[in-house]
Length: 269
Image (cartoon, rainbow, N blue to C red; front, side, top):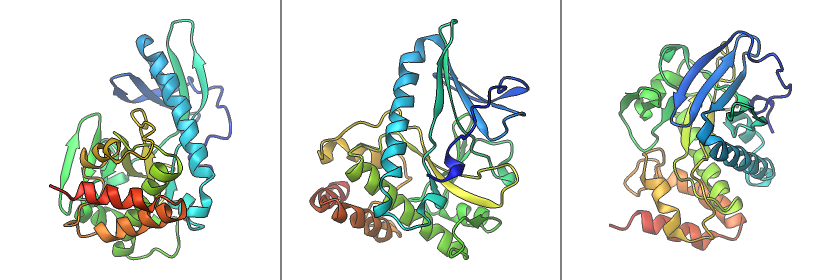
């Protein structure tokens, strides 16, 4: 797995000069001036069981993607990141925590929530406090003009958008057909590995709600319909590009029939 998706050192002095990054319904996310690339999620007391489930599930998905290199090109792990958590701790107070690599915001949105990619929307800007800064394709093209892909072969803004969509198709193909999981309620974030980096990455995060689907298409549809991250509908400009990469994985895993049923169900009124 690419080093920018994992924490190599335990960061034992994390709480020295720590500061809050954001809050969610189940806890608070912190970072530290000592361990600048580390984020720590601290739960409220009643959410420790959920936190442990999140931790275990994310380890499982991280392992699945790490073992799926035969379905990707050699630069995929540089462009796409599944954060690998570590150091799950129960505290005497009843709270618990775990650590992950921190995702850094772009300079242009420094005081705003992380950028999320609405790749099924051509022109949209929406900010929801504490949740995300949602950008459509036009806005992403404007933003990424100032940043570089970790893949040196991707240069123009059109190539950058097409690469994001191709990688999203590949990633969802792996999640659905290799890992056998839904993509329910996950988020597609575009960010940077450090505060000074001029490179961007796609981060796929928040696997709290994903579940095994046993190749039942009806269990998978909602994950694609809930948020416009995915250009899966036939009238989407990049639909064929997404499905080309999804189907490539499905074909290699002998689940092409599942992929065809999924696309058909998503495009049936």
